[in-house]
Amino acid sequence: MSGVVVTGIGVTAPNGVGTERYWAATLAGTSGIRPITRFDATGYPCALAGEVPGFDAARWVPGRVIPQTDHWTHLSFAATSMALDDAGLDPARYPEFAMGVITSTSSSGGEFGQRELAKLWSAGPRHVGAFQSIAWFYAATTGQLSIRYGMRGPCAAIAAEQAGGLDAIAHARRVLRDGPATMVVSGGTDASLAPYGLVAQLTTGHLATGTDPAAAYTPFDRDAAGYVPGEGGAILVLEDEQHAVRHRRARPYARIAGHAATFDPRPGSGRPGGLGRAVAGALDDAGLAPADIDVVFADAAGVAELDLAEASVLTEVFGPRGVPVTAPKTMTGRLYAGAALDVAAAALAIRDGLIPPTVATRDLADGCDLDLVLDRPREAPVRAALVVARGHGGFNSAMVLVRHDPFDR
Amino acid sequence: MSQTTTFTLDDLREIMRAAVGVDDGVDLGADILDTGFPELGYDSLAVLELTSLIGRRYDFEVPDELVERLTTPRSVVDYVNDRLVEARS
Image (tube, rainbow over all chains, first blue to last red; front, side):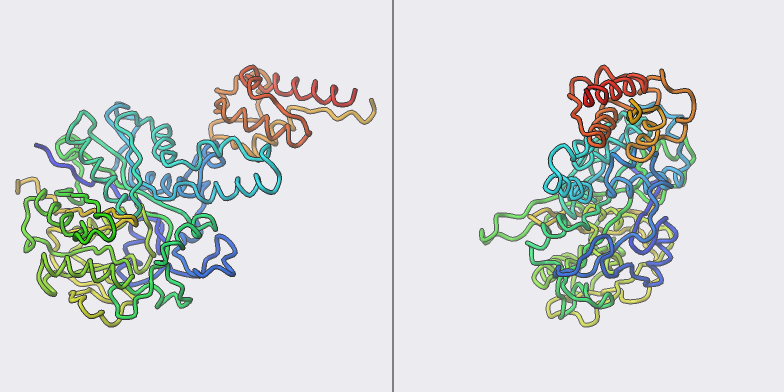
């Protein structure tokens, strides 16, 4: 069976728009976490966010599409355009049913919805625009990309909060294995930095309330006090390996070797959470042992009990300090469906033999016995990377990427 | 009659540009009076948005079902002018 490989990456991240800009900033430890500017956040308990700076939708999104789509869709359009360029793929030259779009979002068009709902209560129903009917909903990005590029093969939208960024890519891998599609645009972005989106998240009690951008989001730290939300994410071009390598002579970043998704038991059931089973399942799917994994991109919730739960799973599987662990999302905030960015970062780590750092975390909490890569990138051959993501509400997802080597299989 | 408000193709162009959007390949400045909306990149939802914006600006309601019949800029301009004349009489 032919594998599924990553041949293109597009990034819209708070610390860099464009894959190489994001990667350079990440390796340099440059954070994109700053005071919220997309709306007046005075009076909200959450003051910081990872916003994509200076984003110009008109550069990436056709004029007719801009007013009928949310910022979250604009961020995906930019990332998709970059990913296709990076892959050297011109969709116009491929059969429309050979190409699919499978994206994830957790909050969909929150900012657009905020604007239209404000018109509803301030001016009345006649003032709500017609595009509200399509802009806010989960499948809007997938649908608009499908129309934009004439990609009429397998299309889907996946909502699983932070886990969705990985689950979308896993679903893309599934449809590529099933055929006949040979290329799928996949990944995810989110943009929930509007009052309506933010207030919904406040109910979890997991958002950081700190005001110092350099110290607000410190996963695995003894002083961890929640996470900073962010916007943006990554879109990847996934291809059937034969198609990419034999037909197109593309040079893949990595192969998606394994994935598993689980759901936590009902709270209070006394049964263990599902994260361990997701990690074990992804390794099993990849046919790899824990010792084969060279780096773990952690979910890194920044919430004491969630950090401990993740660290416990990692020490159980890999042994105490048994594998380098990192959380570059400390420079972007948690991006929800934008967790696809961690998959992109894993692919880049494989390409460059560099593990990007975690910033802000200082002293590991008791029980978080991790080899956390702090402050500076670490040089190390990366043949296989594990990416972990948990979505609020019980979603767990784990994905294994391996260096692409056509002669090794 | 001296203070008649009339709705012109240029008024329509301005609303299309400012509020509903125009794709790169479309020249709104051309003679588009009888060009079908689909050719201008406008699907039925975009026409609905366009007519409801005009309705809000000139304070009348456009029945949703009428949108199917508004297939060209000319049909919109004529319809709006009819409604404006109606409103004054």
